[in-house]
Length: 313
Image 1 (cartoon, rainbow, N blue to C red):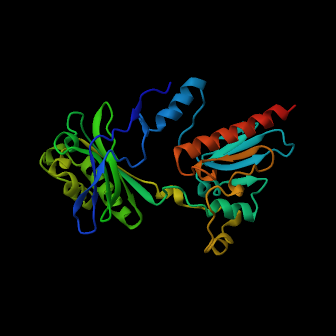
Image 2: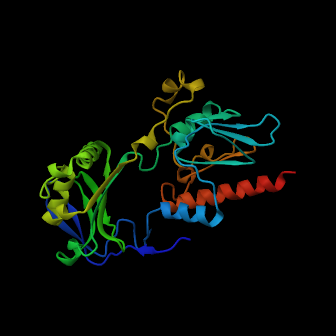
Image 3: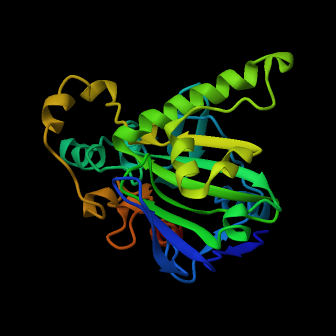
């Protein structure tokens, strides 16, 4: 089951980096996510893994959905994946970024208005990337040496917002990178891939990765940032891409120009027919983009599914 909620430790000073690189104190006990915040040991995947294990769910990874179609006699829904798998269900809940949901072929069809709403809803954090540096558990130098709690904001970048992401295994610093600064995340990811395939005898222990991201962290926390034991980078821009279904490919680009749907628009969560439901954090009028919004959307869709299932003969 799900265990080990980690309270975000806010003891210590938070700092801000100004446009000119000056580092100033923001105050004590600041947190990027507000008071009382908690994290999940193992990340948010621990939540879905716990649900899978508790209910013995059949989870299929790397199975992109190509089509969702209600049977002609309305007896079931057929789901077809891009690699040819075919599944059947009484009710389907589509819980994914609206732009990606719009890329699926549906029967009955979405219709132009509904497709527009899904395709033009920005994916929360779809313009962002994340960088995380892991250190040995006893090497939280920003706390032990400097009295900092790891929370920082920056007007200079590339990282706009960062925090202490330590757990029982590692001390850690993480941060978000946005928009044009994502080029530095891509560049750092490429260097990490090159380093991973480099023969062991050609890798110098003192060799440092060069990156504006690491330069910034050194400005804020000092040279010990280079003592990390692992560095992870991820960019979410792929989830913010809409690929129109073949039937709409010709007309979509012109229609979508200058159009944007707001989070929580009712068209994002209306059922399609009787058996296809929609969830996901962007569908929520409140708390959209946050974990709370995802949970609220999931609970709503579950209630709708149960109501449908109870009405079936």
